[in-house]
Image 1: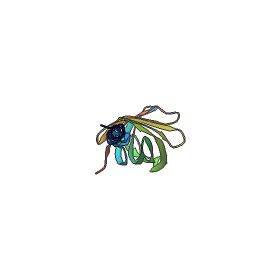
Image 2: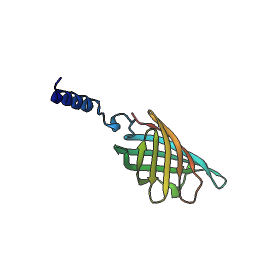
Image 3: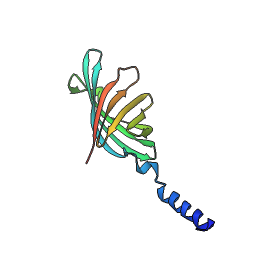
Image 4: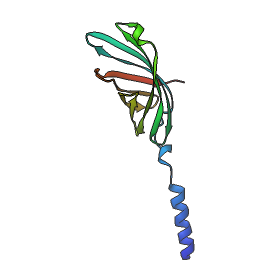
Length: 133
């Protein structure tokens, strides 16, 4: 084989094996519906959560909407709120800043995720969500 042919074959093999990393990682883009639960003071707290996420490589952006419930009922102060989210998804780990002072950290397993939703000056809430069909 001539040197030029060897270089060409090497180039073709290398090019054929180059697979974008984003094609191998599970994506988080889409609509996710779930719940965040915990305790605020001495009262049980539950938030219905909807996230709409877009992903480009590891970068994730979107919105998170919540309806806050205290003691099992939606409160006047807790009407539906929507904030922007921004962060990264690497492997099965999702890390998002939520609004001006919150944070969501979750492990993604196919069509579901679970983790914690932290809010300023409040204990973290347990978080679970599934991808809407």
